[in-house]
Length: 221
Image (tube, rainbow, N blue to C red):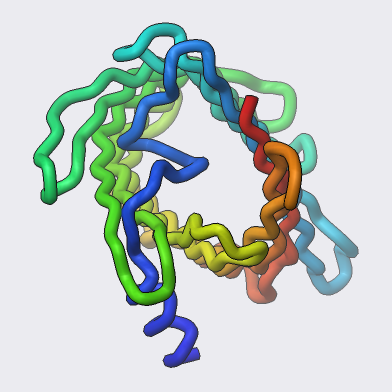
């Protein structure tokens, strides 16, 4: 485990990542991510979590997107967002901002939700190839609930190798409740010819006693 963490931290390098919170899509370019995570729960069988994420470069300085997640019809959300550049710091990385609006549900009941995100990203060059580091800080207001504070971190490689590592960490906090966290170490398998990248990994989070198995497909258009 220590070697894996050291490898991931050492592999930060310059590139445009697929999941690009601080980077905007080029005009006319798009990206989609489909993911499914399966958890085994004692006495309940297999539980699933699915997600759909998409981005489209409407203009050079405007990216539109969709972020949706569903937990086996129990609860989920869907948000449309717009991303705008904020600042670029040369060797210090770059900042972008997102504003989103959508809805979330618990079983058959639904409510509005609003989200504001500030994203920072930076590329690096290291001995293992090219990759990126990103941090996303968000405030999420759900109309029937409290204000949720979120901080997500991503580090990954995007070199020309067929297989590259990826690590995603997500946290969220509501005052008066325990901190929620999830960690997803994964391997990215790049297609030799074509725009597809397959993701296979595991997810461990604060809500479940056992880790889940995660599959995802990234595609650029």
